[in-house]
Length: 241
Length: 253
Image 1: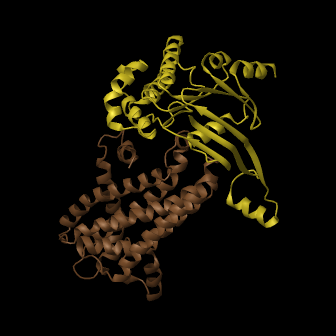
Image 2 (image 1 turned 180 degrees about the vertical axis):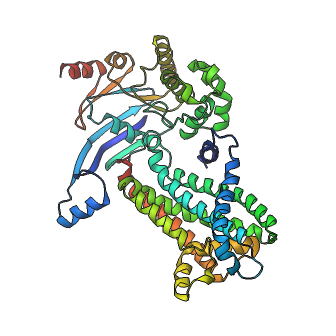
Image 3 (image 1 turned 30 degrees about the vertical axis):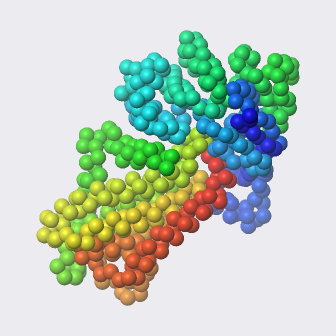
C-alpha cells in the first residue's frame, strides 16, 4: 500500500523582480507600473508513489527541485497545484539539528528536537541517556550545545531523529555524518528502520549510497521528473548525462 | 493537543533563556519593571503625582502602566519576530507555525503575572491597599494575550514580506506609549485629547487593570466591551489573515 502519494505536484514561487523587498520600492514600482512578478517553477507535474519499506533516491543537479520536493513531502510547503499525501509519522532529516539551540544543553536539545517532531516528551526523557550514548556524546549531554563540535551536533541530531520508528524518513545528505565508524553505525540503523517498515526518501549525490540502499530512483531536472525506475538504470543514465 | 508539550517547552525556554548567562536569572523579570518604574517615578512624580484624584499613589499607578505596556510592546515585537526567527525550523519540520507567535504571547503573559509581585510590593510600600478584585487582573492579562497574538500573527507575515515593517512598528509602538495614560493622569489633558486617548484600546485594558488591582481608575461597561471586542477581533482577524497568506510567505523564509 502506498504510504506516500504525489499527484501532479506543482510548486511555483512568485518572485518579485525588484532588488529588495522594501515597501517604498513596491509602491514606487506599482505606481510606475513596473512591478513585475515572475513565476518561478520549482516543481512541475511530479507524481509518484512510495510503498512501505521502499527507499526512493532523488537525484538531480543543484536547483533541480530536490529540496523543494522534500519540503512538500515534509508538509512544510503546500503544493501550488496537485496533492501530496503522506500517511503516517514523518521524521524529517532534511537538515540535522534544525531547531537546535546553542545555549541549551545536549539533553534539552534532544527534548526540543523530539517535541518539534511531535514525539512524546516524557518517553524521550527516559530515552535521552541512551540517545546520548549512541551518539557518543554521553559526557557532554549536560553542557550547552555551543561547546559541541559540529560532528557531535550532527551525531546527536541523527541519533535523536532515528531513535523512534517512524513511517517516513526524509533524508537529505545526512548519511555522510561523522567518521567511518559512525557512518557504518548509522547505515545499519537506517536498514533496521527500513526493515521495520519505514519508507525512505533519500536525497544524495553519493551514488554509492544510492545504489546500496535505494529500491527506486527519481531523477529530477528543472522541476520535471526526467526518469523514474530501477536505481541502477537511473543512476547509469544520470551519470552518462 | 499534540503540541501542548512543545508549547510548554518553548514557553519555558523563552522565559529562562534570556537570562541564561546572568547571575540572578529570572530575578530580572521581577527587577526590570521596578527599575523602569523607579526611573520614571523620579522623573514624573514632581509633575503628575499631585494631579491624581483621591488617595491614589503615583508609584503603583505608574507601575501598572509600565507592566501593561511592556507586555504589549515586547509581546507584539516578540511574536511578530518569532516566525522569521524560527524560519530554519519551519522550513524543515512541520510544526503549526502559529505556535511560535502564541508562545511569545504566553511568555509575555507569564512575565506580566510575575510582574504583579513587585507591583504588590510597590502598593504596600506606598501605603495603598490591594483590592479584592485582584483576580480580575487575570481576565485583562488573558485578553491582552489574545490581542498580542492576533497582532503578532499579522505582523509576522508582514515582517517576512517587507523588511520595513519592523521600523514602522517600532515607531508606532513608541507613539502608543504616549497615547496611553501610562505616566500621566487622563485629567491633565483637554477634553478633545481625552477622547483620542480613550479611543486607544490599550487605555481600556489599562483602566480595567488599575481598577482591578487597586481601585486606581474608573471603569465603565464601555471599557469592558472595548477590551473584549478588540481582543476577540484581533485573534480572529490574525488567525484568518495568517491562514490565508502563510502559503505564500513560507516560500520566502
